[in-house]
Image 1 (cartoon, one colour):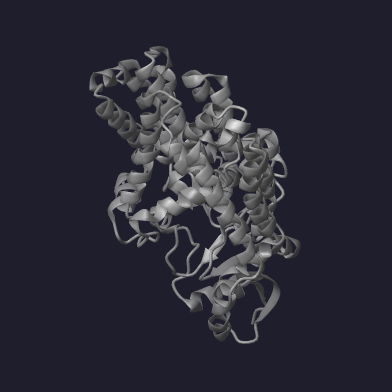
Image 2 (tube, one colour):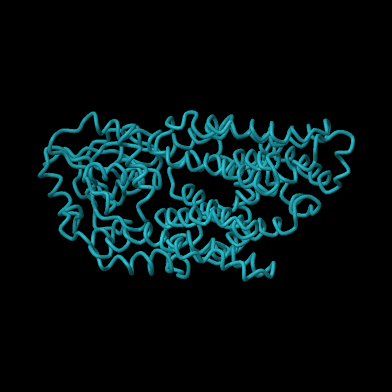
Length: 528
């Protein structure tokens, strides 16, 4: 099942900006520059994140070529690894049945499946972080000290994926559990000198070598990119309320999120200590990122695994259903509420009031996937109520999950510049140049294989620009940009439609639109 969910048509959607295009292009530039130490984006040093996913993506390109499947392979393998991890932890804690149910819940969570099919840093981070947390709990609660080397290996790989957060979060989770259980002395189990040496020996060399080459790296990486994102009000993704992650979590866990209140309130199945640990595992992640000034939906991805284990164990405890199924009054109330809300959502989608119709207009690109998903979400509780068979949960979730890859393809068609890049490649000549006018597309660089020349506007390349001031990729003025374009046998411009009138004023009648994708125009400059 996991192979189908995470790998079927994995390479069909085009890579999307910004994340997929960025990380794929960094992996491509590893091979172009032959530099495995310093990640580069647009051929400038790019040091916002550690290099492990870039390395994995580069290795995937080396073996499979510059293809979408190869770009997404590290994330898909991490997602599948997380499913096996859920099974292994559930089996170690309660037996193979609960482990299997927990793994199936995780694999069919809509958000987990979608992110497992996209190139991001967050899915590999979730795998390594959860591997460390889960194995660390087994070492603490079951006295399995032989797992400690694997705990520290996972921590090191997590640090090389996204930085210190891969150590901070597991530490907070373990300490919270020890305090709640009044077992603080057991934390000494984790203070293994050999394990700490393993962690430092694997994680620190890259940071030391980069700092040696670029002394400004420490302030940029630690102060700006980590403490700054957590504490500062000057980042892009601020202003979101404290409760932001609650609806995000419920959305990521669909269709299972409807059963979360029942599972959280049910106390008659797993050992109380295990239950508290799973709640603390998810809760610490949610609270930590809720306190952060910078909020992105993907940050809470690691919280899905412990909640899936909690759900899986409770579903397994229901047994085979039958006449005694509705003795679970909490479950009955949940199913009735889910059923009513599900069919109400279908009705509102089919006959939306005027205000809602405007909000649903962008979702028309997902026809017929979205209405099919809504119908399935309503059918699941309806059939469970009628047939009293909990197996219907898994069948329904699997059917909903099969719609996710199709939805990703629909969204990619709106957000990927792959078709623009193909037009650019077909017209490219030696000496041509690609210029982004107040616009930069990482995926366009990946698909075209060309560097972007950019105006004097602030981008994510700013730190790399300072590290390599003689890069020659940025223009100080519009006049300098047009002089550069005139000096080339052919110059292509990428610009948003809203900015085109301003660009056209700099050289009236000299631009020809080759093609467009949504509001993005690919132009050719016809020269003087």
